[in-house]
Image 1 (tube, helix red, strand yellow):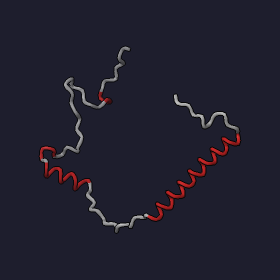
Image 2 (image 1 turned 180 degrees about the horizontal axis):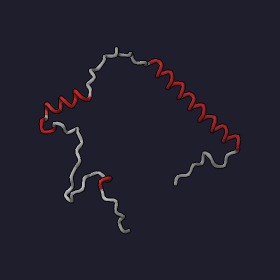
Image 3 (image 1 turned 135 degrees about the vertical axis):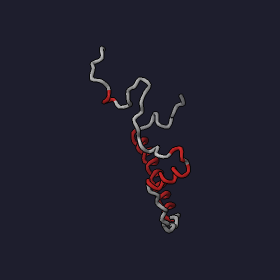
Image 4 (image 1 turned 60 degrees about the horizontal axis):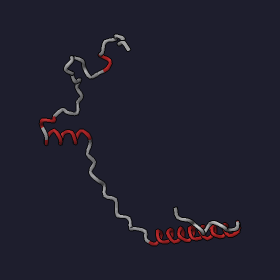
Length: 98
């Protein structure tokens, strides 16, 4: 590990001075950053309203583009090979052994 002799063997006053120097530099950088942000304000562009597509319009567009996906937005019960549906509430009310 590299040693940091700057903070060792210092008196309390020296450590406070080192901390104050860092605080002043931080404040100076903050002021410079704030001033640069104020000077370089971008010119706002006029708001152009974007066309809003409703869900029904999007579904109709997809149905026209991909007819094999027509009515894919509707959920159906999937029947599994063992004859049960995908819903958990259709299982029999038997208690399974643990």
